[in-house]
View 1 (cartoon, rainbow, N blue to C red):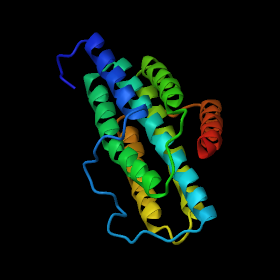
View 2: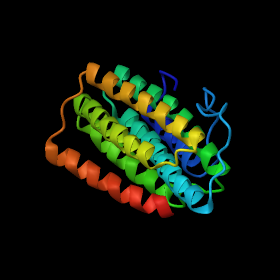
View 3: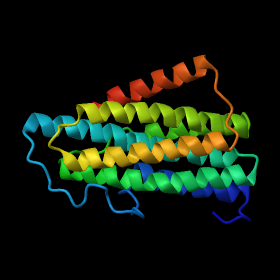
View 4: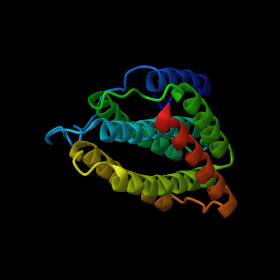
Length: 213
């Protein structure tokens, strides 16, 4: 985003991003899908449905990540932190696209509630930014650590034959760990345990609903 952009300019830019991320087809990725060179697995109906549900959860998680970073960038105090949030959101676009491609291959659709997930996550991200940059970075680190654990569980649940989905999830896990480490090195504050617990409960609700819808 232009360095001279006003808060109103940034707000309208984020509104445009909200529509593109939650309603339109996923933006192009800057990197090819990690599983692009692997053969598409022949899954039975139950395996395909389960893999599709898991990748729908991951896709919704990336919609939420875009919203969180956008909200935090909007309210960040330091330009450096704002740029880091915007850069992280750009990197997460790859994940969004990869998950969308896997949903299409598995004959599944994104969550119909993605606009709602985006709006809620944007509000949470903006609130974290208003709390201060160190707390905002702490929120990023805690979120990414939870996402790492979540992706680990999906690697355990995905069908062994679905190499393409597994390759996507494995690369996502690597990237999320790097985002968490960057936030930590940038001065992230450690969030109180009750806040982290509340974040985990909220994520669990989202995952249960997005798996089916």
